[in-house]
Image 1 (cartoon, rainbow, N blue to C red):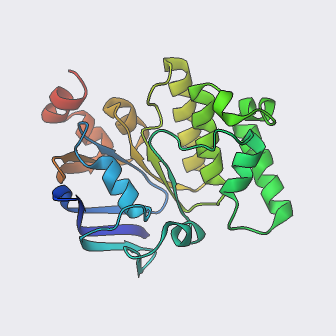
Image 2: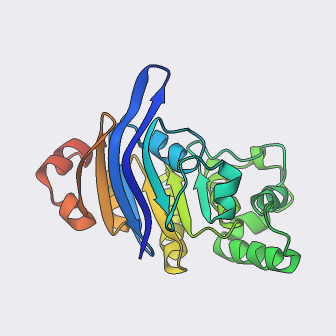
Length: 236
């Protein structure tokens, strides 16, 4: 089932066109990678999909509805959540309070607690840090919290922006194991990740973005074997 379709999306910052008319599709149950160099427009694309940037052109169709004029909180209620670049946690709140903030659009108290328990099972470190102020945790723990907070809204589509940024290799491995687990639980994922090899390894399909445009797309394994991709993004 087609969950998200983007047609001719354009996003500008002032007079600079950061996204210059891209098309992409995401099907229910997939992990899709969006890779490219810094400044290619990847994060801007996610921000536009999440309602944080207003497109200047194009159509975003989510679950059969055009959503490019929806506000972020409206999209969260419709099952679209973003874990932003830099994590964006509430640094002065505890782990528990951050998770509850992720469920702000819900009022099913018992189910909320069950979801917190599920997140603690997936990220035991968060349970250990339950009462700790989030800003005092390590980068990896904060990334776990950012993902857990997004999951508290029970998303159908999770947008992940640079989840491995600044993390030690062991923590990166744990985060990507969690991405597989989240996908296996039925959440569709659009993944922006600087580590292109890791992103494509975990994904079903991928898009390559350059200078605000999609220049290549295909099955993840096909992109991993593509000479241009290997040279430009995999360091091979």
